[in-house]
Image (cartoon, rainbow, N blue to C red; front, top):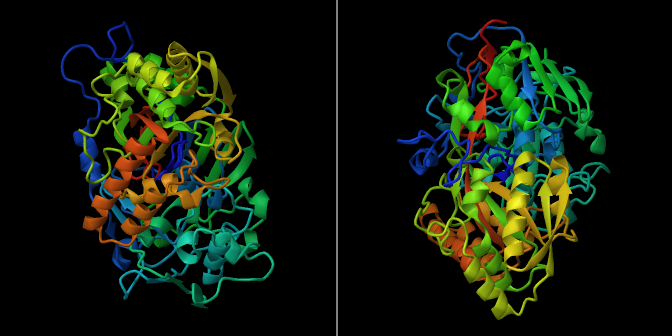
Length: 599
């Protein structure tokens, strides 16, 4: 999925900034009290493991099912604490931009979600989720009539071809790479280094557009997950006539129900109705409100305070991808009227302390740091039991086959870390007192709080920690550089769809060590790489065993990233906002069904 503000849970990346002070014996504002917790549990996460269905033409035909009681009109206010990471679909692999994408972008497919959170892949610009007759090696898509961009240009197969081919160019450096690598291998850029911009195209043996309404993908091996991959925001359509290359990231053309009317980078954005969007072509989205007013300068504490007070313009407001402020968690969860205005869910993300293996080369050192991490305190800094649970591994509880007992570093038994074990390992490794470590962190309340916790723990075992703050909007771009100057950085990752392949492949495949790729640790292990290739060719039941084998080798024998905690979500919305519910697909408030009760 992505990073969480991270890369996109489907998400993909992603950034979470949830809440937090909670489960220790010290006094805290965790909303706990005595008795049973109502925070989401791993049982709830298991309910999110249901397989995704593939929808037919009937399921893909608009308009979307009406939301009971929905009314038209008014503007919803969107609170964010920093700007969107990207707006160009090809660059979108982080959750905040993925949430935004559903308002203005459209792809060949999309995820349709019912009231229980069950997901079906349906045709979005396409007439259905895709047709294959050879087990997934060849997929054919027919395009719907009536789909246009915001200037009224009809979307054709040439636009779909352009969308895929531009991903091969250097213009795009920060999005998913599944489909490109499936079509042309891991070094796919060599197949079309300039993308479509100099008149060259992928051969028809790979991507064929026999007429204006038909697109055919041709793979060398079965790719049964293609409909889910195409539903990612990173593969949304960029019309050939509208493509402005690098500039597209600041002014994309809309195909969805809303378009950008005004954008002030780092400050605000206004979306208004896209009059060229036809609800009869869309079985997922609505266009109830007149638009959205984004403010990207509202801190997480301020968002929470405004929404708790529920006064004035805050009544029409939502948290977009930020979460309830940790310090105000009790004010939210202990007041019944405020708590009614929250959405909660188990996210597909795992937060981990990633090691730059080019700089932290000794496994004993990595293991020592892993043992030293006070995971419980890290969870507290992100919402306590409402923000997460201690992680034993790198695969989330939302994935099929999750093993809750897997805990090779004993984090569940010693949630506040094992300082003595860490010191012992460092002594064996011959690490001198005062050895410097450079830790990069995002300038969010969560990032800043966790930086203090980590620095304190690592200094207890003898390191001299140099903390380097990075702007939230560019965090993954900076740590995604191969020659970055950091030893450690917290990253979050969630599956792009319910399969370990969408975690282990993008994050731990040695073939994907490159600038802008999601292999943030730069792990390149021959055995892991072979297991990945083996699993990708297997049927799901056999593949599950291979993925587990790869996961165990990664965590226990290499340790490129220390598991810290599994992420949960709790967000607030104003009392005049209707249709609010948790989205299994996005792991945030469901942006598709919102309306204002009193426009």
